[in-house]
Length: 440
Ligand SMILES: Cc1ncc(COP(=O)(O)O)c(C=O)c1O
Image 1 (cartoon, helix red, strand yellow):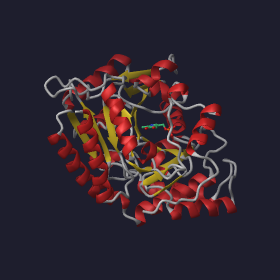
Image 2 (tube, helix red, strand yellow; image 1 turned 30 degrees about the horizontal axis):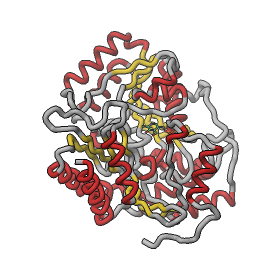
Image 3 (spheres, protein in one colour; image 1 turned 180 degrees about the vertical axis):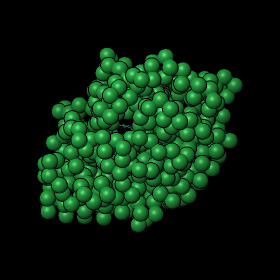
């Protein structure tokens, strides 16, 4: 694919220097950040002002599922901006009307009503409210190996160490362990995982618990694919105790796992379904929380105490509608499932040839590699919540070779746009292969 060579007015160095001078980078000590300056992007590639091209093996932040620069979505955003760029959320608009109806078609079970937000964190904030208002209970369960967002409530739900600096968070949030305990301890079987969850429910008092938030396939915290029976068991426990099951599909939704939503793999219908990222493929910010009919009905005579100036933003809704049309017309969900089979075999191949690969996991185009010091002890190549020289070296290798992906603790991700071709995927794995050799 040709790189567009037309440049803006800034060099990469100027862009980085001025950005660092006047803007704050997230999750970082500012002196440590070393951002890639990006001038443009198309398909599975993006490039710097000087024309260094990167294969985007993480769909940016696991969100540009349809790839970069899709003309159909760009056109829809332009048209909407010309027609009606903004209208306040007390009014109705055509993109809002059509998007709600379209999502009602695509989401599982009787989920048919949506509250639109700017992104995933805000969608989770509103899911907390919906669950509390609907049940009249206040406690929320969430899991330790999870990320639910950086606003105050979503940050409290988040189990991973990014939560610690924001504590104490909102009251009433209780964390439960996951079925996965890290590469050295591995997985609980379904029976044990569900028994542990039920024990926490008993200890906390089922009548005090409004909701259980979980990523059906956990994203940043390890592409954790639950054993068959786990999500069905969670569904049953939630039903038994009148607790709302909230599926946070901000990362796992919209084809990432080879289904529209990860819960579809196990035929589970959550009470609330939280989405963002792939909803617009991040071309314009938009999140949503979808709810089952009974929950929507609850608010027909009761006030929903929630609002946002940018709720149901026409540009977001128009971008989402066009993005959903791209998934359908280009058959990207089925394509992700097919390409996911190849990706699994490429991951297996890495594991068979590199002793530092301790585990690989993938579902659709949602993949991860966990690296270990050796396979006997399974000691991770970087500690929990930590870094190490070999992992830093691997990250530098990827960057030099033009492969962009997320390197975190002892793991790195393989989450390319769903449009990736077999050859592009193989090319990415070839760079990974050489990278692993370089740190062996
Ligand atoms: C599962 C999950 N939930 C929520 C969020 C937060 O979404 P946002 O960053 O759009 O607020 C993320 C972001 O990565 C996520 O992965």
